Amino acid sequence: MSSSSRQPVLFVGHGSPMNAIETTPWSRAWRTLGASLRTPKAILAVSAHWYGAGTFVTGQAQPPTIHDFGGFPRALSEVQYPAKGDPALARRVADLVRTTPPTTLSSAWGLDHGTWSVLVHIREQADVPVIQLSLDARIPTSEHVEIGKRLAPLRNEGVLIVASGNVTHNLRHAMGVMRSGAPTTLVAWAKQFDDDVVARLAARDTAGLSRLTDTEHGRMSHPTPDHWLPMLYAAGAGGDDAVSYPVEGFDLGSLSMRCVRWG
Image 1 (cartoon, one colour):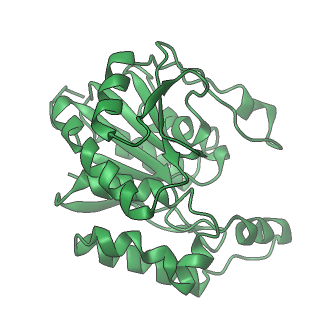
Image 2: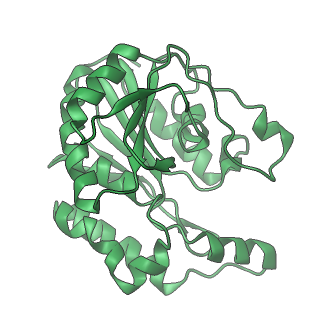
């Protein structure tokens, strides 16, 4: 891969952490996606799993690999993604985001599984710096889009923006299907929401996109907003660029694994 200045924006449906260590249709597709990318100067990750009060960005020179889950095989907890951080880029992100109160650099977090479970496939070498931005649970959905727009200039500075969540994420439904062992059937509300997302993206309708979880099938698809909000950052940063879908499909009958690429 050769270096280039302007980078695309990615939204990756990350699904189960086990995709990090298993060969699945999703992990294979992420490797193919990674091979299609030019080498970035750095990666800014926005993960569903750093969700709370306030906006923060990892400021360490060497962010730790966080294993923020339980009940999985030991091999998953032994995964390390040893990418360096970039404190200067973290300060640049904080300046761009312009939240109130101001975005601050944090050493209390690192790279969580929403980030490293996909980067171990997309950028296996861990050879470019990675920083991660948190999601503020207190602000309206429209403001998450605006933050994404403020991050867009990073693309011309060689920074690859990777947002990681899921287009649909009803964990109770997915876990019920997993425990039952029954054949999976795609549920109507998940397909409807996934279709609505594609329609809004095609229309470049970020305002409509930010309101989708207010619908009945939106509430079913996202009982909590954490896995949805990264999409809004990506759509804001992607702007009017051409949209493509490197990965499509559902896991466990309702979990959309769709990936979106802008540019």
